[in-house]
Image (tube, rainbow over all chains, first blue to last red):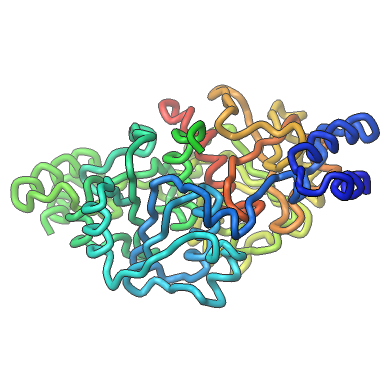
Length: 210
Length: 210
C-alpha cells in the first residue's frame, strides 16, 4: 500500500520511488529480505527494449526439437540483452504456442532471424565480424572455464539438437568449440541449461558495459 | 571401428584408449572438430558415481510447479557432481514420468531427499554447516557476479516457485540472497536456467578439486 501511494505521488520517477520505498519499508517493516516488486526491478518496457543498445552476442539454434527449449532460450536472451537469436533448420519459430509458454513474452523483445540451415547463419555471422563458437564436445574443444572471452568481441554461439548435437558440417565452419565441464553419468546438459551457462559466462565479462 | 578395436585390445584402460584414438584419428581423419563418442567422454557409470565423492553443494527446490524443471535440475546436478537435491513442498519427486523425461536417468545418479517444507530443509542444512543462499530479488540481494564463493564452503542454494518465487518465511531463514543480473523485459529467468547459471558459478571455483 505504501509503495502504491508513493507511486501515485511521484508518477514516472521510478528510481526515486524505489529509494523512498526501501527507506520507508526499512523503518516500518525492517526486513532486508523483502522481495522486490516488478516496479522496483526497473525492468524495461517492450518499447524501451527495442530502443536499447544490445550486447553483440548472438545465439544460433540448430535443429532444436523442443519448442519449450526455444522459448527458454528467448527468455535467457532477453535477460542477458542479446543482440539476436538465429533460428535454423527445423527449430520452431514464433509465433508458436509452446515457445510462448516458456518465453512468456520474450519472443517479442528479442530480435530473431530464420535461416534454412545453420551453416548459412554461421557464414553470415563470420562475414559480420563475429567469432563463432559451437557448444560441443570434440577433440579440440576448450573447457568453458578456460575460455577468456574478450568483452569487446562480437561473439556467436551455436547450440545443437538435443540428441545428436551440432551437425559435423556446421562444426567445420565454426572458429572453435566450447565444452562445459561435466562429471556425472549423463553426456550432456539440457540445451536450455547449457545455453544459460555459456551465455552467462560471456555476459558476466561485460556487466560493467551494460 | 578403430576405436572399438582399440577398446577390445585394451579393456579397462579408457584413458590410454582415448589418447590412442585421438592420435590415430588425427593421422587418418585429421579433423580436430571430430565429436567425441560416449566412451571418449569418460563418463562414470551409475555404480561408479555412487562411490564418487561429491562436492558439498545442495540445491533446494521449493514448490516447483513443473516436473520438467525438476528433471532438468537433476540433470544439471548430475553434471556438476552435487551432493544432493532437497525437494520440498509440492515439488514432484521421483519416480515421476515428467521428471524422467528431462532428467534422462540423472534422477538415479543424484541423491535426493524430501522435506514437507523448505524451512525444515534450510534448518537441517544450517545445522549441518551449510551456508544457505536463496536465489531471489530482494532489497539486500547480492548480484551473482559479486558473490565470492569460497571453494571450501558447504553451500546450499534455494530455488523457488516459477511464479511466486521463494516463500517470505523461507527467505527469513536463509543466510543471504543471490540475484542474477538481468536487463530485459521479463522479471526472471526460467528456474532450471537460473539454477544452471548459479550452480555453474559455484562449481567453476572448485574445478581443480573435482
